[in-house]
Length: 111
Length: 114
Image 1: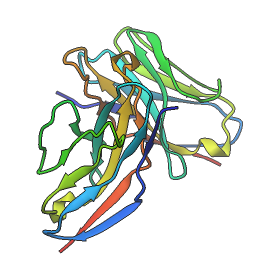
Image 2 (image 1 turned 60 degrees about the horizontal axis):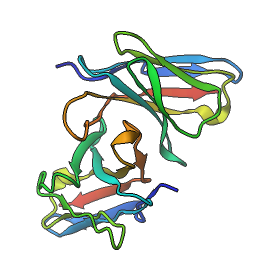
Image 3 (image 1 turned 90 degrees about the horizontal axis):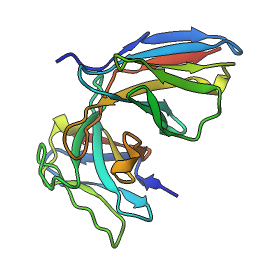
């Protein structure tokens, strides 16, 4: 079964501290992994995807197939990073727009 | 480019009624997906339409249905509403280009069933 697990509902850090939002997945094939973010009173939007291997707003995420993880990291958190973060999986391009989401982690960055 | 729009934004219904929600995708996008978001279950995939055909379907009862029109606008319908159908319903559209067809989400329709 396809499943995405985000073990932390809330993660609170101080500004300037490193951040790691955990994401583990269950999928038998080769999935595509994404991180979506929802800032207060804004729409859900794509933050980054594993295939791009890029850094967006200082965030990076590496797909670890051995540990079936796709953790989101940022070395120095900023107050504007406070938001809900969702890890999502798509089981291949034949799945079209079907995304399996984790429960989300609320990141709170304190001054 | 205008973003994904959803109407209405808020809706209050009573048990047993039916409801229709509408989603207008970004111009040029041909895929529309629907999600239900609740505090308990999180974001759950309902279905996806592409070129007026249902391409993928989640694990929801038959009371949940949808359709897509030739202009790519999509509607979803929930019949015989139950209290548990109270949720935020999100739609997302994506285009044809690129390998990973980024999905763009709408603001959602908040449905309350009394």
